[in-house]
Image 1: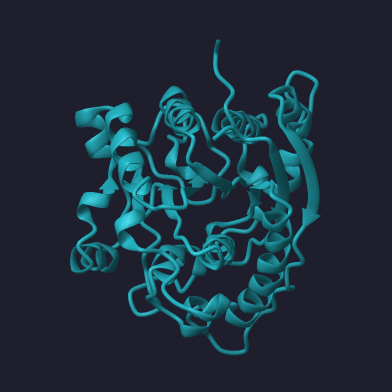
Image 2 (image 1 turned 120 degrees about the vertical axis):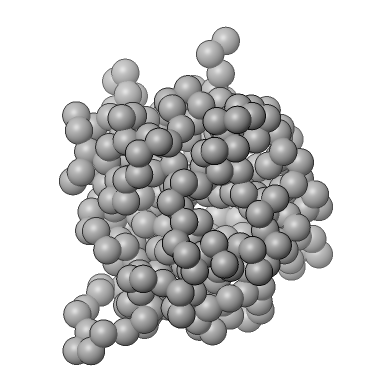
Length: 310
């Protein structure tokens, strides 16, 4: 299915992470000029109509008098309801959501909105998750209490009830329709969770990519996510990429994907034709070097929307 219309939504939420700055990634990507043109202009050059819906309203975080786990839960729930409402408008307009983050905690409300939209149509949607981390912690296993390490668990129905129960049901994601690409930094509690849930074959780690190549791993991930009758969403954390190519993120881990491996993965997803939304997160301009991470993020968005070399 070719993409005809895209709706851009900014989600400048950064309090789900331990490092501030990812909330600034939204406008950094939106306003960045690549070869003289903005992101929206480049999307139009692909023959895709684009409408920028601005930013979802994000609650202002405050310091808690006592430590809590998850951190900033009340603000996360309030923000989530706003994010879901904003995405509903884009989905109901027949536009493919292009979500600019923000930290990866936003995947809880963004995928909840998308899954609920397709549920109301009587179908289910899958998910391809690019990340150096598993993001499958619960409050009980999280070393930090930061929600950006918990979104996958919440979508699978594990963790805080207020987060898992968004849109009135849980889980949002059938694990049979889920694939994860690029993991190389997994907490002990996450490893146990993956084993307990029988998800090892749904994780294509950097070791798997080293052994088999990015193309083979993406092909397998596409086969898994394409089992979902409604297509699949894609969420891309830029820390999946090696810090040599994307230094502007808050949780860097050496040994990630190369520039070309990252583009190849998204070019393959675009060619497959089943993508129903694209999200990119954890771009932190405060940590970037010469804007290369911001520019790479914009280039990756274009690859996901169908831009090719020839």
